[in-house]
Image 1 (cartoon, one colour):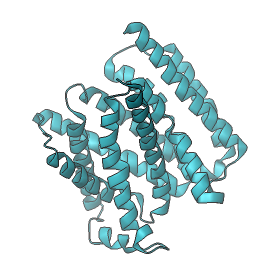
Image 2 (tube, rainbow, N blue to C red; image 1 turned 90 degrees about the horizontal axis):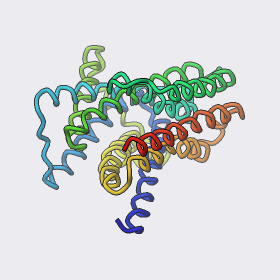
Image 3 (cartoon, helix red, strand yellow; image 1 turned 30 degrees about the horizontal axis):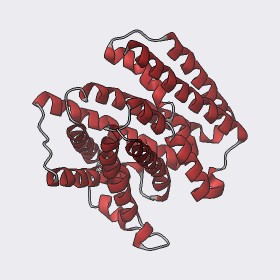
Image 4 (cartoon, rainbow, N blue to C red; image 1 turned 60 degrees about the horizontal axis):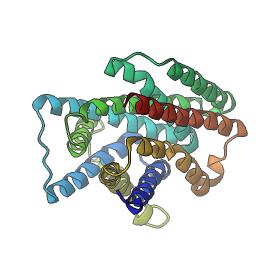
Length: 305
């Protein structure tokens, strides 16, 4: 693999993570509630992704058991996105992303259960360090307590989703996994909205809101950007990049998502995103632990591999 190819792949991976970091900004700008936002995001992303995969001739073949598992896993990612955007709406983008970065540690705690391995003592110690970071944020950002709790639940759901995918990716291609999961999430959310009496024309009527620039920053347009660019395109491009970069390089870059997101929130959303110095201290502790965990995992793989 040439050095130019490696550099190109790294730059593209950073761009993808930048796009993912921007989802928080979009979640703040979109005026509809989290359920409506995620419902539209999932069906739009599914349509864009399936259309692209059909054009390039990809197969969606899987066993009935695998399809059912993926459809159920889709409900987990739907719940993750709903709690993520709800946390943004009741707190701030910065608070939500800081808490979401704990997902890597939740994953480290869940993996021993799903993959039937012993829990590493170092992972417990790192988890305790994350608790310290979270305590600092809780202690000095009391006005965002509910948002922090919702964001942490989103981080847990993200970790659960990642572990399930870690099992499924051994048997199926990423495009098959993502297509059925997006579909399953949309079906699960549709059923929930139907049972709760919210599945009506109001789901579409609520998106007629225009922004200060008309349709260019109205809800319809912003959700389409979220579904097409931040979901479908980011998935397709990340799969291409993963063919060049090592899993460690990819994981390390993904860990920068909260950093990019918090910086963009401060840049685009101004005063609303300015937090206390203690918040940034807690965030630095959490992010440091995330990078240390990634480094330790890399070392462990190098020794065992």
